[in-house]
Image (cartoon, rainbow, N blue to C red; front, side, top):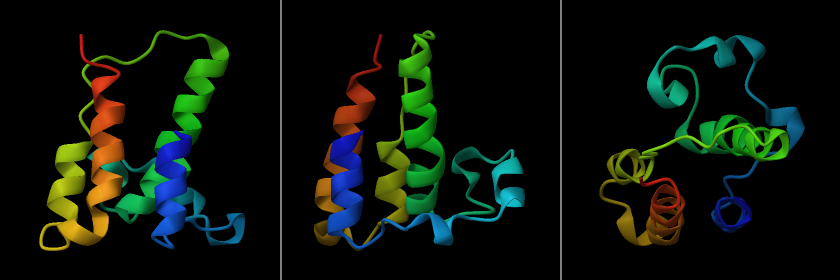
Amino acid sequence: MSEIEKELKNLNLWSDAENRPADEAFLSQTPFFMDTMEFHQWLQFVLIPKMIEIVNSKAPLPKNVSIHPYAQEIYRGKWQEYKLLIQKLMEFDKLFKS
């Protein structure tokens, strides 16, 4: 997770707590909360905290995580700029392949 966070910071996409999306944005039922947040916000405020929570609680890890294809779609045409972030997400996804 720290590698994803690091790359978001390198891309100036990491926000402080003051720029956290409104509470209502977290009620989304849409994958990646694409109707209420930017993808980088979802990574920072949903994915990373949820994964930390799962690890800390020793809950079962999810299976067949596939985040990088969405990142490739979001950053289509900007692949050079977001290449490292997409690579980090590919590495993350591989951790959960069964």
